[in-house]
Length: 64
Image (cartoon, rainbow, N blue to C red; front, side):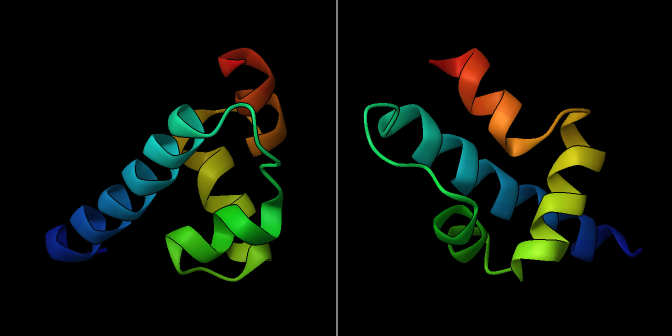
């Protein structure tokens, strides 16, 4: 993966983390979060887990 691609992936994931932090009292489903990252749900779930070492669901639980 090129450096530019990696930076875009990190920016997408940062948008998701920012959204989660700002909307902990809202519904944070996989479909909405993958849309924020502009990935398919399947790809987003795999990338999130690979990047952070835990699932989106578990991250939201820990952040709350």
